Amino acid sequence: MKKILLNVVMICTLLLGFATIVYAAIDHTPAQQQAKERYGYPDLGWIVITNAGKEKIVIHSAAREIKQATKIGIMDGYPDGNFKPNEPITRGEFIKMLIGLATNRSFDFGSVDTAYSQWYGPYVTIAEMQGVINKNQYTEKELEEPITRIEMILMLAKTQIKMKNIPQTQVEDKLRYTDIGYLTKEERALVLHAAQYDLLEGMKENPEGKLNPTANLTRGEAAMAIMRVY
Image (tube, rainbow, N blue to C red):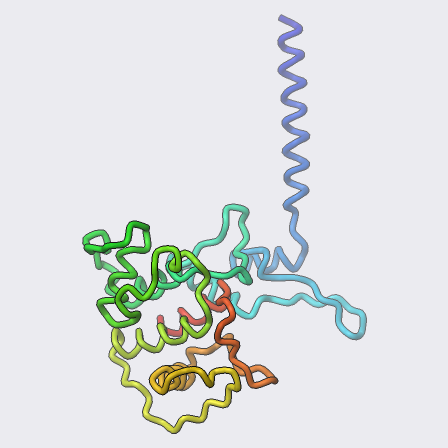
């Protein structure tokens, strides 16, 4: 009996030691703690060293929108407690967020007859029906791949125009991006609309005058863009 009790004590001691090690491993820096308290995720804050050699806390530019998107339930963090704002977001994930916001909150997506077999199917079907994307524009494999910045911009503009009934801008084309020459006239008009309504927040023209249209959209950029429509 004493041997059994001794074994139990030893196991408990080992477990407590392991718990202490795990706790120490997830201890946050002051910047991470501040970000977690204010915005819900520790990886939205970090320390940088200034030119004067002093430490400075930096908060991710999309932190406010990430907090909002999480609060209304259209985005979530990862099981480890982080948001990973610089990770890419898939087409299916973005379409779900966008259509979820653009439709009536009481709408039953489970009632949608969709040809897609995955969870994003009803949202993609609604997007097709509303003209946000073309019918069969993407295969299921493509819907599970990262969305590009230009795809996101076009979807945002079309959602505003077709689902939010916001008139498309009819202003002079003053887009100065040097890397969108391949776009059609219609696509340029949609980019111009997005720019006029500040839907490109988080993707402002960089010093080289590039939009980087084919780059993958990040989770942080998606939060900033989606909250503009909301």
